[in-house]
Length: 218
Image 1 (tube, rainbow, N blue to C red):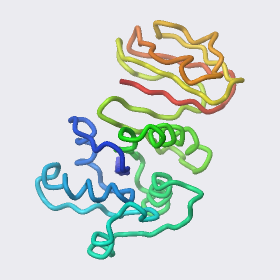
Image 2 (cartoon, rainbow, N blue to C red):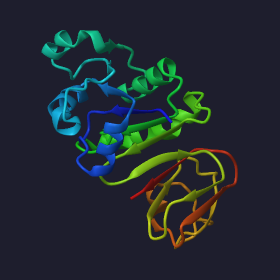
Image 3 (cartoon, helix red, strand yellow):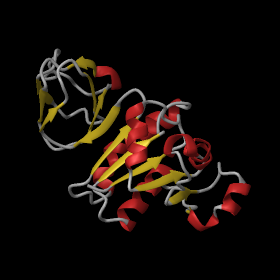
Image 4 (tube, one colour):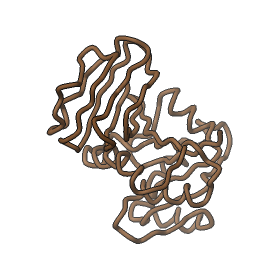
């Protein structure tokens, strides 16, 4: 199961799980200014020199000295219709079709606006790209987020903290296995189905219709 990591320019991971994902990734793509953070942490994380496979972005936050020194692995994409995280994902999907799992690290923290924007983009990727069986998640020191598009049963572990979001106020999601059922929730604000907890190892979320939702686990 070849995996890829996108490293964004938020808070660089410190905890064991996201660092494990970084170390085990077959492909690594840094978003613009995240490359400088990667270089500083590289020896500590890998115990050796391991450059990313690609650095992608509009290069507005990458020092010119790094742009010149590492020009062979840098792809400059000037268009501003998509952010660097999305450009990196598009590159991975188009360049390495064998990759079936993409972990996005460093996409949260430091700036609240970037955090909200990057998380919301997870819900857009199933519509923007033909993902097939590929899975995409966003992992930080504090949790894991991924998009949902329809009814599903998930192995989360009893006692796990669960928060659910959707921009679709016509969507109803009936749940089993959660301390507070979501059956009557109207998704007209972000907080409406947050701070829940799994009461059993598996939870089932039944969608009233295919739509967009985001699940965040601690």
